[in-house]
Length: 183
Image (tube, rainbow, N blue to C red; front, side, top):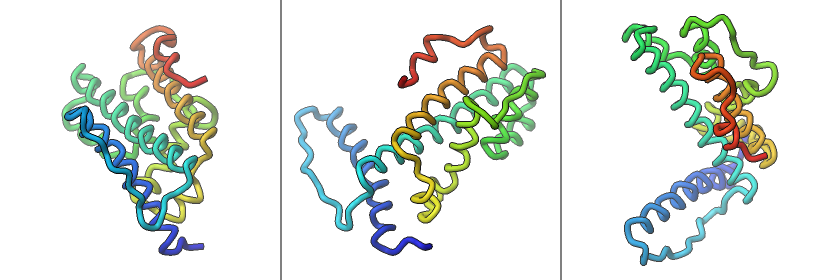
């Protein structure tokens, strides 16, 4: 089933609202006395729960991309990967890069996408293309509930910390990092 024009507009308006909300915040940082006029977007938006679930997923996907790229750059800086190897790895899909990080760093322990916490990485990567390429039908169909979005966020944090342990960045999970979760 294909989304009709009205449904696509609600999705577009939701992305636009999230961007406007951040722009308003930045404008108010520059000029604390500035007040934003409230705006209604013609065509409406997704419901409140969907708006925030969409935002959680979008920011998690961007954070995941940034994290995996950072770890690849570290391997290059540590001369574990050459400049050309790092450049090549950057062009792999995010899930593939995440799965290869332990091997690239010379570790024998890997990750399993079959269960938490790394299952969240797989799920976020599964949503990524629908989200960033705005595949309306798939995006609306797959958009997680708020509870699931928070769960993905929590498991994402745990997966990042587990990867730190796997890579030998520290010997055990850092409770400070794990306290970022929303339990």
